[in-house]
Length: 160
Image (cartoon, rainbow, N blue to C red; front, side, top):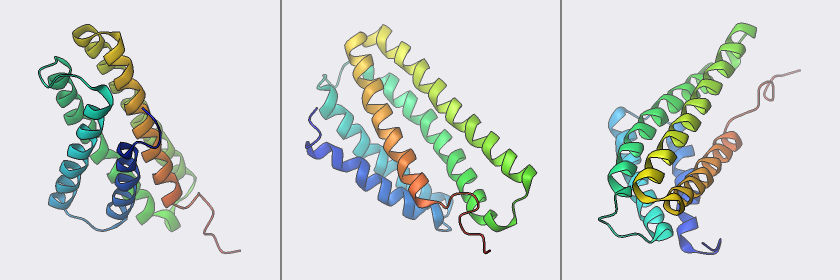
């Protein structure tokens, strides 16, 4: 896929929406609506990238993956909200717990992606699984960059 393909605008839009939603006091319905809109746009982008038939065995596995990924996304949002809300009240133990939680969330997502790469490979072949892995890694990396750009570094806002 060429980088000038319009499908690559979707992660940029999602990053903007995610960054706006992540720091607002959104209720559960807002988050679910956002995830549904993002999920639909993401599925369209992946469909355009993979160019496989809608009856391919990939799609039920992908839908299962997305359900689990969205649950992890809710946990990540909760952790980020906690970080932002408590930024000015953190001590050494809180810093350590925050980073441990972020490591756990990152590792959980990486493990989920690895697990579904193997499931997709078995059902749809190595090419489709590799394409899925590549585009999903791209999207998640873009989201991670967007999140990191949207939150202050530890100590950045301290008054001297």
